[in-house]
Amino acid sequence: MVAEITKDFMANVIRADIEAALATVGEKHGLKMTAGNATFAPTNFSLKIDAVIIGANPDKDRFLQNATRLGLQASDFGREFADGKHKFTICGMSKTGLVIASRKAGGEYTFKPWAVSKALGYPVSS
Image (tube, rainbow, N blue to C red; front, side, top):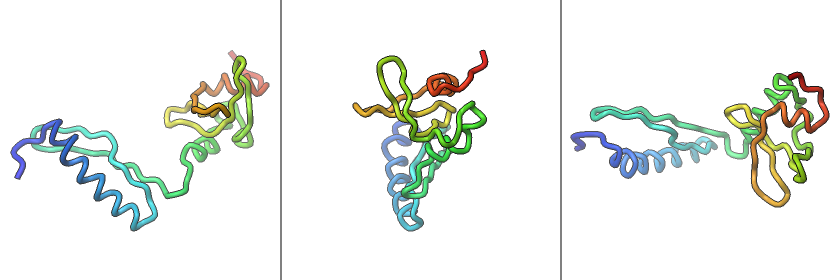
């Protein structure tokens, strides 16, 4: 029985057990489940749980839902734009509202929506 909840206990004991349990529950329901940020005190803790339907693309969904509000169009998903000498393909939106784009050479990068709008030739107000 635990006498005190410590950072080491949370990081190395509880989190591992919770991740294993979440994997089992997620598999049963067709979800990928992970333990997120935790806060704790000596006698209690709280833990965020993230769940995504297996095969879903939350970054794409976020882009499609928010594109017009940010000066883009939902149809811009998958479009290519140039930033300097590099070309990028729009592949989603981050939880913080940045556009996620990939390069053929590899890697994902984030851009402010107004910068992508400008690169795509949309009028951008200052």
